[in-house]
Amino acid sequence: MAECKRYESLWVNAIDLCKMAAEAACNTGAEQANISIKTSIQLAQAQVKEAKKMSAAAEKKLAETKVDEIQRMAEYAAFLEDSDEHEVHEAYLRED
View 1 (cartoon, rainbow, N blue to C red):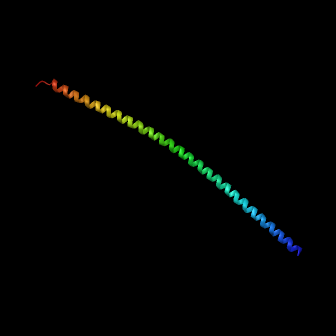
View 2: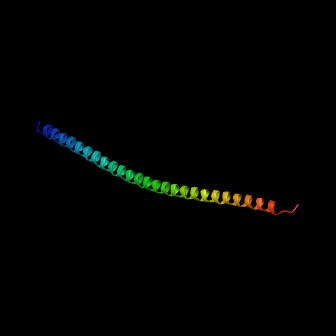
View 3: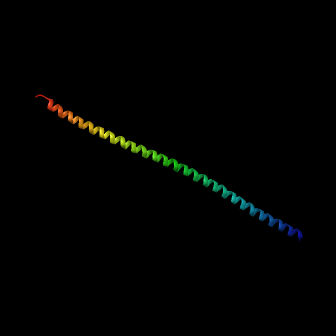
């Protein structure tokens, strides 16, 4: 009977140790998952930051392109006006 009590005590201790080991493994897994999530969040934040930089650069380039287009259109309009003036002057200069 004493030996049965001893075995029962050993089994209870073994079960308790298994429970503690399972809990420790679970906590370790949770820590690893937490670390993985934090790493993923940091990576996502870096990607968002890079995307914002690229977006700002694209917006700047678009604004520069619009300015260039406006300047070209103004130069073209001035060229057309200048051409019209030359044509008018040439018509007056012709001797018929």
